[in-house]
Image 1 (spheres, rainbow, N blue to C red):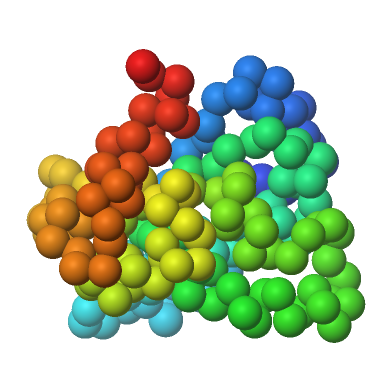
Image 2: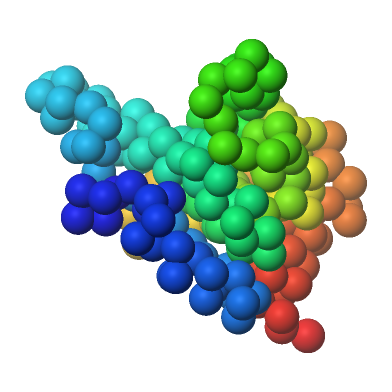
Length: 186
């Protein structure tokens, strides 16, 4: 949310249209999930606001951008997200079925198609299984190496480089080629 407004609302259409027109990616990082979940639920041990809240807000943002039709109105728009794209890459089947069943969706394609074209996700997932699942769902072309430096999260470079089920071409794409392509760096 931006000051309590959903980024997919029409008031932000000029911003999304300009990013689409300029062919520049937009990086979204959640601030907190106070608009979705009562913050008292995140109290106690485990830093749940970060562990659950940040990926939840990323998921809500992407879902609204898809279901509210923002990505369709801006077909060249590229969204880059942290936290492995939230829960959406792991939960795409449910979102596809929701739209198949007619759940008030403004999007014109199945949600997984946006994951394969307009949405990019970083590698802050910390397990080879989840990294492989992201690549399988989104395609290696949509996954970008990410780090949470200077925070104390583990660096994911070794995760990518040592991923046994990824080809060297996929690894090169994830650790640099995709970002170079996205930013038009030759």
